[in-house]
Image 1 (tube, rainbow, N blue to C red):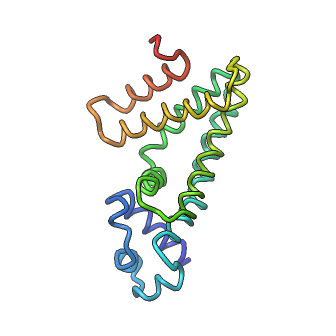
Image 2: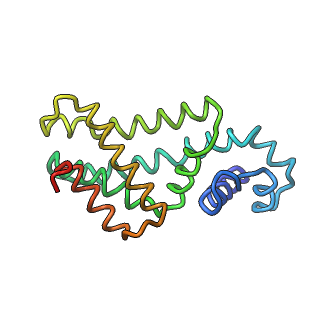
Length: 179
């Protein structure tokens, strides 16, 4: 239960203040534990980050996969892939993952994030192949680039409403830059 409380506190800290706010004293304060107790659960900030990725990313990816499974066509799967990721932007698990990925992490943590992200991209390769892409893996990586750019735009609180950013991203995913 203490570990879960620490992870929940870490999510809150990351979503509220970014990676700079994720400190062991802040975790201790949020959970009511002594600072030395935090070290009993995690050896470093990177260890907290790695565990958050291991716990939260599969939940997020499962939500994207479930949305794609409900789609009846390859195009519908692409649309669901984009829409669901952008819908999750406001979720604090997502904000924590974004904050984590923007931070300076050790090589192990970066590799876990990269692998998790690769798993997300792999979910859309088949649908892109069905749509006739000659290089569906490359198309999937570029599609994720559109999603990542839209996420950043939404996270920045840009002039456009999140719904407008989502519609633009879906349009680019399905029609390219033709409009």
